[in-house]
Image (cartoon, rainbow, N blue to C red; front, top):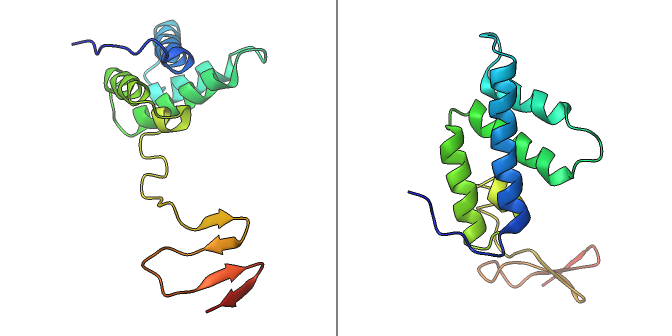
Length: 131
């Protein structure tokens, strides 16, 4: 089942699809039982000319990491497409758990760094703690 794609997903989706095809192409070209798919993804990134966009290298790195974790490339692509469809930035699309537990604090404002609302009434202002 192919998900309905948002028309503005553009570069993230394109790089994900190209990365998957590049790994498949390199895998077919260099059939060797010593190479796992994650290593082939690293070879594919390494073989790109320097003028290729960095996001394609980032997508290949992401694919390599998830292949190394045992995720099939079809599942990786599906997750990237879903994250892109939901409007996540490209880092969150390619690395699904990217700072997933990160909260909005410490907030940095022009008045200094503020702690979370659950913390005691403490503010850090230019290196000093004030209560």
